[in-house]
Image 1 (cartoon, rainbow, N blue to C red):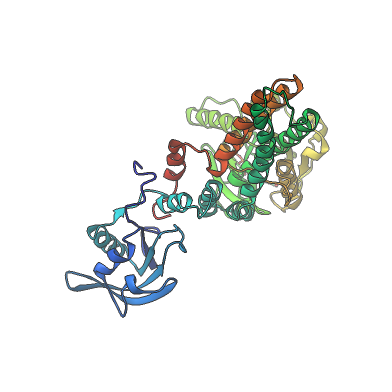
Image 2: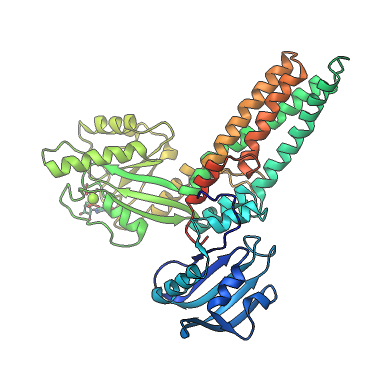
Length: 464
Ligand SMILES: Nc1nc2c(ncn2[C@@H]2O[C@H](COP(=O)(O)OP(=O)(O)OP(=O)(O)O)[C@@H](O)[C@H]2O)c(=O)[nH]1
Ligand SMILES: [Mg+2]
């Protein structure tokens, strides 16, 4: 997007996905939106003369011939999504029809919109701030109830209000320190140092809370990855099938059935869980199985949760301890390890205590009778939940860009606090406070450089 801040063009794109559907919607936005639409639209009134927020039935014509019957929605600036004049043409949802109408709009003088350009214009025209614009994209991609709720709250301005409140407090404080510069000759102190230090520390605490909420935010946005690992025949594929409620993976009594990893996602209590069924871990000379084992180890290393599944109906073998130790060594620091004893319907001979795990991190199930599955799901949910407090009052940061800005703001505030405590002059403190203000400003788009804006909006779909 070379024309980031150039709103002179009128842009057009198909706002609905490619393919066949009930309707498709072509969106046109910009100073010539109505004039361009009217070149091919025949209705009882032209879009140019229609009042805002009205719908108009008519026909799209090309070279005197009808292309489709359509409904044109008219939104006049500034009361539209982009803040500009917007026409939305709802046509029959066929690929040929929608592409023909789009081509007509482009021939009539519109430019094809870049990804996210409608939302970019909404942002540039002050219809929403940057964090709200990003929430639009999150809302579109939300797959679960919690992802939907957090993105909607962000769209409605929850994060914006949080950031604006912090910035206002900082701005008030910063002006006092800056004002001292005007009286530097007289050595007047306007900002009480003790009170200022307390305020900065409090704001820093709030900023740190926002950073800390990211672990939960990431969980809400991306979900948790749960790897089912263990020895061959433990019942990993059986468990996957039960969780998905379908016969996704092949189950057989032959050890080494699963060779490739199988990945599927489901929503549990509103959070997205991606389960990966893996090749059973054992020493093998089979080349394909060996590759499977290598992949299992990779998944284990990247997992949020590793479920170590154990066939409790067979006694532990001498090398088992080594296997479990290896899994423990492979997982990263934040990974939760759960030990699940399977086949409780049979005679259980495996002693769970030999795993050396805490009882809250293990359970017994039967993939045959489904005994213990509900408790297993509860344990799984509880294992990832600490990351997400779901507290409606506090803010949940779901976006890595926002997290980094909060971190940078926190670091600036730390420097400001050091400067106050070291008795530095007001201008030193003010510089760090200004930095913190700028970092917070990038979250809502006040001080965000154009290349970052480009990067953000280029990830949107075309037509949004
Ligand atoms: N009795 C009983 N049999 C089970 C249970 N769970 C799985 N099985 C059986 O155990 C065998 C192995 O099950 P799978 O789900 O294929 O085991 P896996 O861990 O995926 O094995 P690999 O893919 O070879 O690593 C099959 O014959 C299953 O029917 C259970 O709870 N009780
Ligand atoms: Mg399997």
